[in-house]
Amino acid sequence: MDIVFLEPCFPQNQREFVRALHAVGARVTGIGERPKSSLDDELRRWLTHYEQVGNVTSQGEVERAVRFVQSKVKVQRLEAVVEAHVMNAAKVREACGIPGTSSRTTYLCRDKPTMKEVLTKAGVPCAQSIGSGDRAEIHDFVKRIGLPVIVKPRDGAGASGTRRVDRIEDLDATLASFGVGGNTTGASVAVEEFIEGHEGFYDTLTIDGRVVHDFACHYYPNVLEAMRTRWISPQFVTTNRLDSVSAYAEVKAMGQKVITALGIETSATHMEWFFGPKGLKFNEIGCRPPGVRAWVLYAAANDIDIYREWASCVVHRRPSQKPSRRRAAGIIALRPDRDGRIVGYEGVDEVRRRFGGNVIDMHLPAPGTATQPVEAGYMANAWVRLVANDYDELRGMLDFVGQTLKVRGG
Image 1: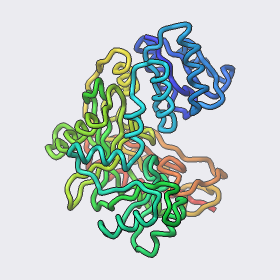
Image 2: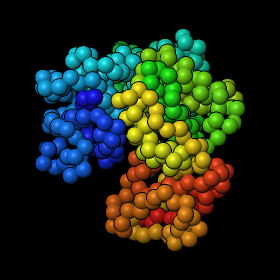
Image 3: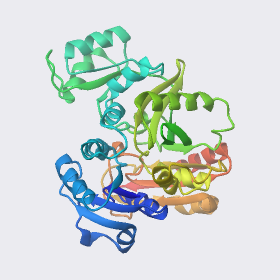
């Protein structure tokens, strides 16, 4: 099978998708922004061909490169796994007659208000929401559903750009920060009912719209709080109880209903949910793998090469392994106590002494490294990833790391 893969070089884990496609027998053409001379020996070995373009988000540039490849071989798939690339890939697929996720499905997975409108009609429980650039319309919506509300970009990923509004007098300033002003339609945002409850995510690999692999993670605390509060060392943890605890059956059923309603066929997905006083509520979905390299946790916890599983689904339309569910795995983000540059660390030796056999890996930027802001995410500064046979035991380990390993800034 000849497959075109969009941007094999950046970010760093993109190479794993290329490796896996090559490993299951695909002939892989990469399209990327870096010159061919910059590819390392492994990428050169895994790739059958490489085309450089100026911008991988330019439909015209990518389409020209794909059509050139099509003049040489029959391209059977065009794959993109980065949020910023998926819509361009969908449009080029359709222009070039290549099977895969449609631009309609991609749009529904990116535009939050339209996504929720479609899913609500399909019977999926969602937060009430509106997509609008009209300040008066937004005010009417907020008056109807009540405060607090969440304001975010219509096509944002995760908590990026997300703001919580608790007071009506703060609403206009928040809307203005997104470019929404006056009573005329301008910049459009997603405004949603704030859902109280625990937040997690449910990730899948699907073939022809059927879930063949799935994984669930839990956030501690919820993302919005984690990305705004310096002293918190936030965690997310993948459970090994997905098949053994009956409560997850509702999450699984909701996930399959979402995939069917949005027309997702053969793809990785990443969807987020809340569970609280109003029950289980769907939040949003990406038609691509999760960020923050969550797949590393899934692989460590389940004794599988998840990139190869993805590739097997794409190329052979079947999984090749079953997740063991043997362990739980998680990451804890460690923030510098102040902005500036990293001065040093405390507690590293104690963490290694206690949990050395449980450490998947850790990232401790060298002293002198510039700190990154809290809102930059879980992997922006220091972090540690751990694995354990018991979920609750792992949670205790991660808590100990957060209490013990300190990142000093200055």
